[in-house]
Length: 192
Image (tube, rainbow, N blue to C red; front, side, top):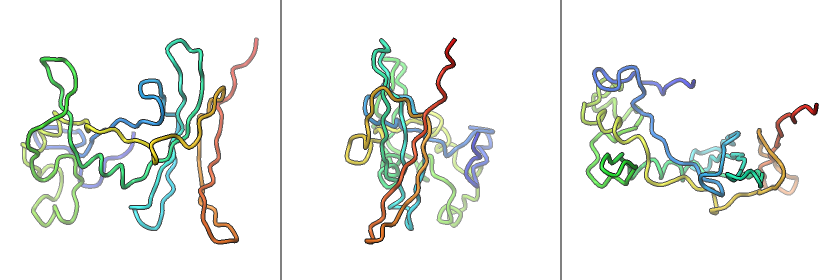
């Protein structure tokens, strides 16, 4: 399990021993509901606005008649925009998640403790108001999904199950830099 961000110690009474900066969003590549995330790699740039991620998904249908893999690219700036809101909330009456239309307390729920928040007296998550912690507890899901750059996969390949990927930026002699991805497949099942 990953470590919580620095300053996220949980709340004093609400969200004790739980992350207060944890939010989640749906990561979509090609066919929502039929995708399984298999691996992710980050290629950091000189600025966070140009940092991007690659993810490999396997696609399958409920009838198992089609197996395919998809590779998608996501930009950090787009991910940050999704996590800026709006939020979802579970609606007991309809027993489903719906978009939250109410107000959002300050400091923004799900935020990490930054120097700006420390200057306001929030030195750790235990200093956050109960209103913020209650909001995080009830609204952990973002309303918009994270979609790939250009809205589609970079690669969609049938009859292949990619399970791992890694990458590195490569500069050509002519000057442009490209991302070189290495894709791995899982070990095949032993034959009887």
